[in-house]
Image 1 (spheres, one colour):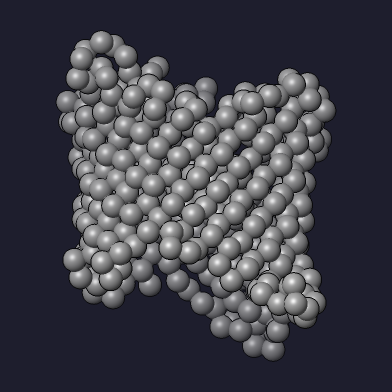
Image 2: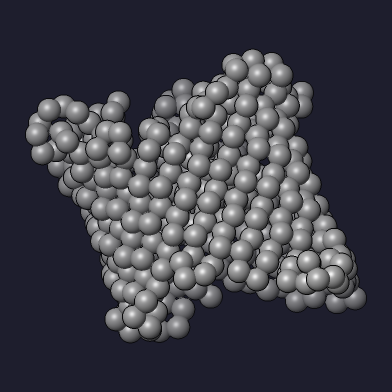
Length: 414
């Protein structure tokens, strides 16, 4: 309960601070509030040791605050508010119990009670200073790397999962500075649009670490042309318990937009103590194309997911357990307000996949209703051989799972 009281106190402090900004017109502009509200209901037939059927209800809001202070400074904040029952509530309870603290929802940020559990999470809280050719950001913010549309190995701080496209990616606590060098007006560089150099530092993954072990430092360079862009980066993670000499990461990403939109993204992480070899490499490539006057859209992607268990930020930068993955998606827009899609995520090593079928309709501006169905598949489902797959109904090492997941969601943007 103490943890929740602190979060509530933080929210009140920020709201009071926002009110103070509004009361100081000489320094701060108006407060801008935006966000989204999701109402979600899910139903799933259970697999393995799971219940025959399970349901989930969730009300989720992401609230964003922004205010300008003077001509150069902006303060941004974002909060997640959640109320859940059924499967989401049980998942939070299971995470808590697995952490060794017993079945205490409070340790996961949730407060239990009759009918529902609730949580509040601070997602972003940082200030941004912009001058002519540079900007500085400090606080709890999102640091994104690479151009990958489906998979993005170089964005390893919080990898995306194509099966959860709506997931809010957590930020990091750190500081970042970006510089935009002037481009000479000469023949060879006349087609350049802009260049950027970024330096940053981030706190260790373990928030209780006060020794500086695992601190992250990085340098990034980026250049855009008319039809393609290139980004390169180097990151160093200070030594900690899993790395005596620290971890080095080199990343590269490129995108080109001609007839096809093609992206390439790669990350190599090296641990001197473990003598990391090919398992330190992760790379992805994707291509997308739209046709039939933009009504049809297709995208395909491949991921090689390296695994380096010695790094302090996870066994694989992609968040997946196997090495080779493929993804494909086809979307058709019936009107400007209604569209349908089918997508597949497959693991080539264990021959498992998860197809997802979805329909989405914009009722009016700001309100969208969608219905999706996921159906995990693997060899055991059809042959009974016991060969479970990572993307199948019951992943290896899990006691239960689902044969399908039906989700109905209404999203309101404001």
